Length: 272
Image (cartoon, rainbow, N blue to C red; front, top):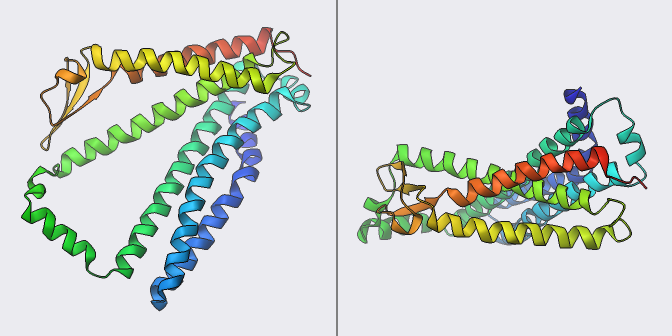
C-alpha cells in the first residue's frame, strides 16, 4: 500500500514543481544557444535568469512540500486522506519520502543551474580557467587539493549530510504543522505552526551545535584521507574537521518528532 501512496503522492506533488523544472530547461537551452552562436548578451541574460530560477526553484519546492502536507491532511482533503484504508504511519511515511526526494531534486536542479552558469562564464572569458589553474600551481595550492579517493569520500559525506539535513527539516516541519492542527491550537494553525517550528528547531539546533564542538566524535579530513576520530571537533589534528554528534542528534530528534507526529495524527488531530 505504501507503494500506491507514493505513486499518488509523486503524481500530485509533481504538478506544483514541474513548472520550475520546465523553466530551468528552457533557460539552459537559451544559454546553450548563446554559447553556440557566441552571442554574449544571451549568455549573460540567461545566466542571471538561471541563477534566479535555481533559487526560486529551491524556495518553491520547500513551500510546495509544506503546502501539500497541510492541504492533503488538514484542509478539506484531510477527510479523504484519513478515510483511506491505510494507517497513519504509511500515510506519513509516503509524504516524508516524497518531500525528501523533491527537496533533494531541487538541490540537484540548483547544482545543474550553477554548473551551466560556470560553463557559460568559461565560454565567455576564454582561457580564464587555465589562468586560475596556473595560479593554483604557482602558489602551491595544487599540493593541498585532496586526492581522488578523498574526493569520493568527501562526495559521499556531502551527500549523506544533505540527506540528513533535508530529513531533519522535513521532520521538524511536519511535526510543527501537525501540532498546530490539534484542537487547542487550530484556530491559528499558521501562526502556531511557525512558532512551534522555530522554537523546536532553534532549541534543538542550539543543543546540537554544543554537542558538535564538545562530544569526541568527528571526521578528520586531510588531503590523503577522511577518517573517524574520537576527539572533539575543535581538537582535531586534521586539515579540516567535521563534528558528527550535532548532526546525529538533530536527525535522532527528527525521528522522534516524526514518531510523535504519527501518534498525534492517529489520536489528536482535529480535521476541519
